[in-house]
Image 1 (cartoon, one colour):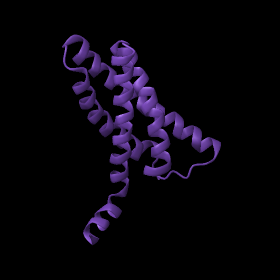
Image 2 (tube, rainbow, N blue to C red):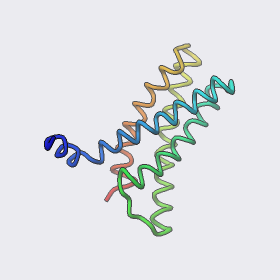
Image 3 (cartoon, one colour):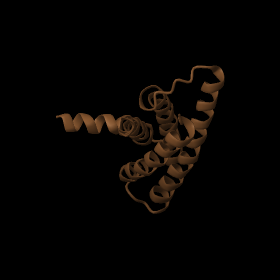
Length: 136
């Protein structure tokens, strides 16, 4: 048990990022499924809605829980929001491009592709958050 605590303490930011990244992925996949399969929106619209909702969720959880950002001034908050959303736009474009290519052009299963792109995007976003946005 002590070993597990030591590992969790040592890798706390990564463990929290994976946990909240998993929740962000769920927000993304559920909202994609809802807009795509329930509302019958096309891939671009469904993916964009899913992206917006998951980025908002990710910003809040990353700031408060993963990276424990103490930035409270307006200047710090604006920097974090702008840099966070800018990095997410970059990864969102990658996500959308992969989804459109695999789903619309190559006719792969959209939900399987959504899961795969989320792994790629989550990895890119971790490094952007750690080294650019919420750096200490």
